[in-house]
Length: 332
Image (cartoon, helix red, strand yellow):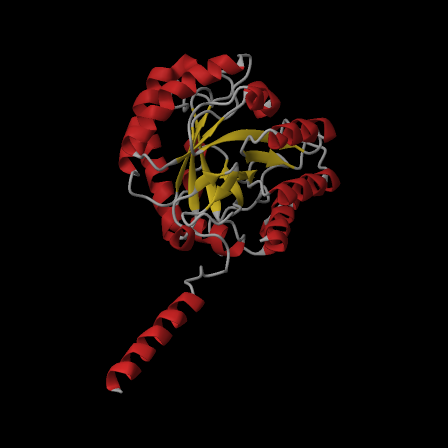
């Protein structure tokens, strides 16, 4: 009888464990619970194969975001804003003399990226390491730097559960074949160090021509493709391209968007932004808004005169910032 009771108690304990799975602090998708992300049947999933969505914000460039790369600010982004992903945008060229490949302090910039990933982990967020191709256009322009960079970060974070690699932000003035050639060199470097990693690849025309990528995708597993939009500029015609890509099985991730014009300036179009969010939510496409800063442009999430980096209140946020907070918490 004692043996039977012991067996029953063990079974009850097992049932109890299975019926009360670990949850994140706010019930959202978090690395502590959902682990390393992967692509299954064209959808973003957690380590157990459950479909998930990420909703978050990008910084305004690592080189000009030192004030906000700290544990206190990342806690605000995670807990107050409700984001479960933060994008660390490392400009490769431009931004005065602070682009990683154009005179920037590579050691300091790398430290900011590494610190940013760790602060994200501390606050249970995924961290997207973004090689921010923009004015340099063709990602092959600085491919030698990219090889070294992605070898370093993939070695650094090979055991991390919260890291996503975005290998080229907005390729432009180049062909899809140029991007493929670049990706076919960079992806194996990452996978050699971090074989289970999720990698996101930019698409032509400032990451809008996802239809082109859908017609000729890369031959790697666990890959997603970038879609970018700004709601006051990009409307139904770009959603049609996205729908074509979805229908053809291309896994999409909106690693950057805004409710402003493509320049980051006026006008603001919340109505079209809401239409985009409805489309993304319907199709299970994760999204990250541009940007967490106090820059003098309407796409910035903070008010221009906001100087603090913690203890935020809702009135500290701009129209775009308030819209994002409402959007994340309504849809999570």
